Figure 1 (cartoon, rainbow, N blue to C red):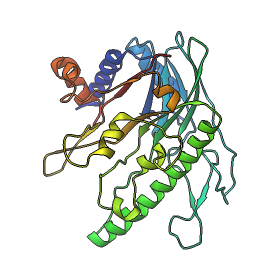
Figure 2 (figure 1 turned 30 degrees about the horizontal axis):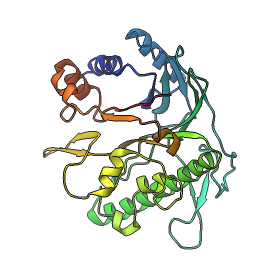
Figure 3 (figure 1 turned 180 degrees about the horizontal axis):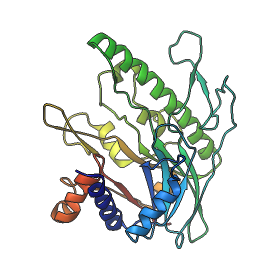
Length: 308
């Protein structure tokens, strides 16, 4: 598969979705040679997408940004980060996502300093009816132990990565609580690289990061129907949003991507769909779309229609 083939497939999928706004988790980065927002807007123009305006959050050094493409005829959007900026010493109270979070993840009475390699994108989205919805786009740290030499090293790194990832989710939930306390309508969405029952280390820590952000132990909870299925049953058919090829084995599927909504938005009756080419009948029966979904990415779109 060439880069041109993948780009064409992405254009096909974006046109088929025909949404008012799309959060792009691995968007083009900004560098001396290009501007991420301009690259996305050029992509939209090339494929005649109505989501033709782009908003990019804090730039990072991973060569992947989190961005929003939206239709300016239907909604308006601005990057609107919350929280206080921090110095190197950080803060334990929901600092701005490009700052430093202080938390004791090792339970050794010595707080660690946690940062995001890809700071979440915070957007104030205003609809045609004048209502404002807060969006937080997330690409959480991977738990995969890259570059290890043996099983013992892999175990240590996996545990350390999970500690850091859970700290990020605690930070994110603090921000969620701030919005819910203020009465904001909120959507938290993206690639969490986590979910209930995904690995053996979940029992060690007691819960997944998804449960933390949903607020399973909070009075006011976020909701995602696919997470609800995964949390309510550990055996049986499960939704999946990604499909990965093992080097020497079959494909593996996992539920990694979520669109969580606050209670008032849930009451509006949103419709969630995962555009999995083999699980979604309309996607499967439309062969060009099915092939485009498989070519575009190893993650599949999670689409939510919300009557606002």
